[in-house]
Amino acid sequence: MEKNDIKQDIKSFINIMDLDELTKLHNYIIKRIKFISETKVMEQVQDFELLDKVYFFDDNGNRIDGTVIKLNKKTVTITTDSGMEWRVSPHFLKKSI
Image (cartoon, rainbow, N blue to C red):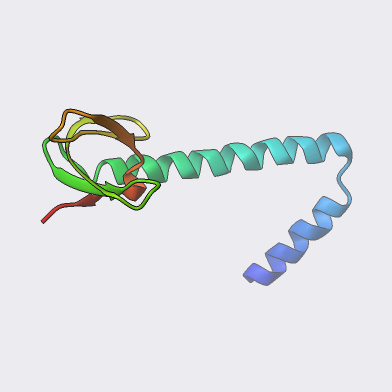
């Protein structure tokens, strides 16, 4: 069976579902999206190690350089030379060369 056929079957099935079934499907889809998203972030966190030199850009476009001091479930904690700590999504971090 081809992907387009499966998509059409899903659409047809959704069209005959009642509100309760649609709500359950919606909740399942949201849980699945959240799981995939969290898994992706956890994989990105694993790209870093303690004491890695990293940088990111703050909301004003300023480059912030720091050192990884903690790997959290969804973020990486870094400290700057001035002693400031930041919890940053790994998506925004780059390793310094």
